[in-house]
Image (cartoon, rainbow, N blue to C red; front, side):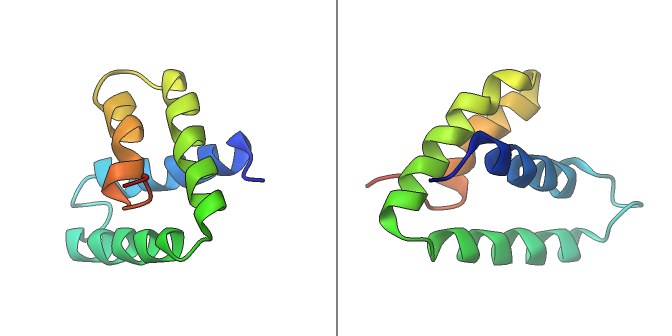
Length: 83
């Protein structure tokens, strides 16, 4: 079972890579990390992907504005939403 705590940890890491300034982190490095994360999440079994996608939606209310929209879109962006 994927807990919301795990989803929060993944979301916070992804938020950092998505929204940090170019001075903080090279954009190409951020993209590489996000692509690796996406691949790792896609490799989860179907039930874990489904639970994680639901957890991202459940935790999105913790965030505001464009960050909230980003978290809500994470299942799609990471390719783990049900087809």
